[in-house]
Length: 345
Image (cartoon, rainbow, N blue to C red; front, side, top):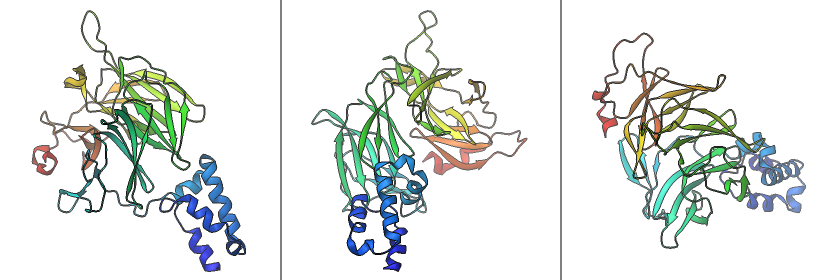
């Protein structure tokens, strides 16, 4: 039993149902082992107050493999993964059930679970679909957040960012207890504000950029985007600085603890980003200002590439991907991106 206690202590809750762990530990036989009551206490605290036990949560919620895998979730079809060695997409095993959603908007993974925001067009409702990698099953849960543009994980919660800032209620989902909870209403509100892609997490806060789809009456130019910051400790949103230029379909990315907005366009037409490519901007947290980041080393035919702090990122399907290309200090010439045929594909 002493050996069993050590084995149980090493179990990661991302691999098993926490209810099963509690049931197995809460037996007379297990209670005779001194270490077991302590482990049972830890599990109960994590179940009911996960945010108060973050170190335990981080360790116990680790997935089985720490190797990242790029996964594509296709509506009403089997998921696919990208084989890095073969450089091609491959379907999951035939036993993997397809998602029932008719449309998929965004996804996020935590532990053994993957959450996908989608639409059940037959029922006419928006849903969160949860895929259990261990049980190999999909679960569907309707919600009242409208069209969801972003999902992100901070501590024990999944934050749901609706496409429109005017959507209420705004919610977060406790991954451990599987319960929804209302949060404060975002500061920048209005039907003309739409969330950009790629919500960022920095300094334990949720950062969302809202593009303003309204146009100036005289110049017909679009308004600049507005940064909003959510503090989970205070349960409040704070409106931060506006960007230097309009941004639609752009992505937020944190590099070396600094927030950048990259990709997307400077216009909006027929409910889609349009116009010219939006510039890369960086946020100065101390002075609450944005400034444009020059793209000196990115050629005109940039394949969706951006230059940030000496690194080249590709914005692929709204996701910023580090290409691994580094720009040496003092480099005077553009990066030869035309030779990277695999990125074109």
